[in-house]
Image: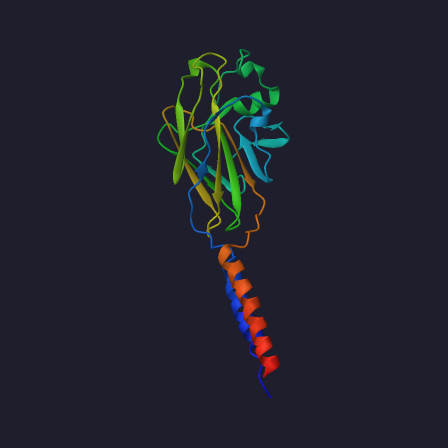
Amino acid sequence: MRRSYVAPLMLAVLSLGTLTTLPRRAAASAITWGTPQTIAADTDISTAGVLLGAFDFNTGATVNTVPFKAYSLGTPNFTLSPVDTGVNEDSATPPFGSLSPAYHSILRASDGNDAGPLVLTMTGLTPGSNYEFEWWLNATNANSGVFNSTATAGNSVTLVSNTTRQDGGVGQFAIGTLTADLSGQQSITFTGTGSWQITAFELRQLPVSVPEPNGLSVFLLGLACLFGAALRNKLRNA
């Protein structure tokens, strides 16, 4: 009796092709930051994916459907050190005066560290999953001083607290994306030229993307089909 090698050979080739489409194991990666944007409207607040946490240093408010909470020590999965908050002056002068009351609320206070860097550590992330981090820096009254703050996680982005350097001016926000590594946590270090280094922030988990088959896997699949057909013909004619 002739032994058929078609099935084992096809299985081996198809298995190799499948391996080429599997996502690579996540490695520690830097945050990829977008360009800083000037604060303008509620729609600044991203609603991509699923919200994991949104915090300010005032009393909390819901902006663009995103519920911000007042940050406090002991907040699960979000550790900010040190915590030294202060309320910035309010202003009715545009452009800050033209923002919604809720947006006013989350931008009215900040956290900082006069003695050095401020570190935010986020835990409970799923290794290999993609996330979006958004943060704000704002000091609407120029009498508070105009200052910069830089967020660093491999890569860096710098925001300015008052883009007009006048009463009623607004600061900036930036969005970064990251892939969680095997530790399931991500740290961001904030350094600045003034007392305040961060005004608000949110973390969102992005939808999982299914990788498209690459050229090698398609080639191997075709090769397996041709090889299997050739073997069947040979065995049939033997």
